[in-house]
Length: 274
Length: 205
Image 1 (cartoon, rainbow over the protein chains, first blue to last red):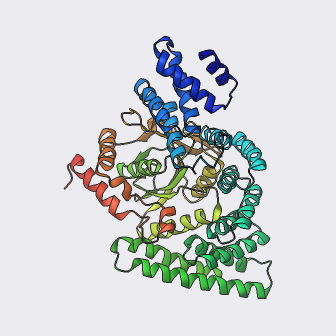
Image 2: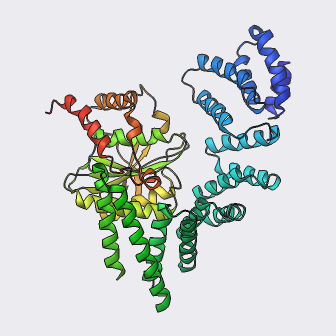
């Protein structure tokens, strides 16, 4: 039996139900005969147990590992995986394969293996094209790798399927702003504005609108009309920001500092714009 | 190059910031209230982001706001810190280098501080930080002997006290401020709590 487990480990098989069956029996009936192999078996069985929503088994494996290796980073990561599994969507409707693949990607991410995580995630999305969480995770990975064009593509997918989600609009706008250049700045401004239409209290979108409009207005390449329009947008954003901060600052002595900083910042930026 | 002194207040807040978001990269700015000179005294820090560190708009916004606040409070931005999500890799990312460059343009003994996640456990004997300085047009590791953390044991104890009293939840970074602008990114309340804990150690009144 332990040879079977070893084979599955070495060949990275994700046949979790089988691993749980064999592993559980091995641990319960034959633990004393396993010697030092038992620790790696606990780990293997724990991961498989998470896949099969067997938190009872996962928990007892984790406890054994914690007792034996109290300061181990590897064990801490396993604990993290268990928490992730408990938080993640109900595995009953997500197949074991799907959950296993996502977990593999999370592990790659935690190990800092971004390019592999990206490759796996792309393959995953070819099969599970409707998985919003996966698209968002891919956009984050691309952002971390400074591949803004691909991040924008992922966010476009998300905006298409979630047209009312202000966060996707605002993140898309941030990516466009980061890419830079007049065309991207104009797109950024439009999407910041769209995010505000969907949620007028999104401060990032408000500041983003202010900054993109200000940069466009200050650009020597734009027509007088475009400049005038963007000065208006920026002015509108300024008034909304001031109002929001005044309301926030009311009666709270402790955030007077941040309020003052914003007021002065807006004033100084006004001067450079005109 | 010159000496760098890291105050308990700055260290504690950086540590709390990295601990608050253990699975994300976090960053922030290092401030000094001392006049410019050969030595750099990092007296405070402002935690900035815990998501999308490499996106421009919020970073630019934060830098501008902190700049303004610094001129209001006679402080200067003297450095940048970052803790990577992947704890086994504490090397500066392109984004870290970029921001540090910007700071260097205004402050010629600016420092870049990376938090070493692997050393962030209770009972660790060495400060979990790696510092870089600008040398020959690149960022080079700073000689450990030029970095001073006064009263290291007291600092560790203060950080532990903050965790046991639950005060570590008081920390607000710029990202959290944007989620709820009634939260104060200058952390006046937390600063006061930390200064209270520091004073007995120094015998100051």
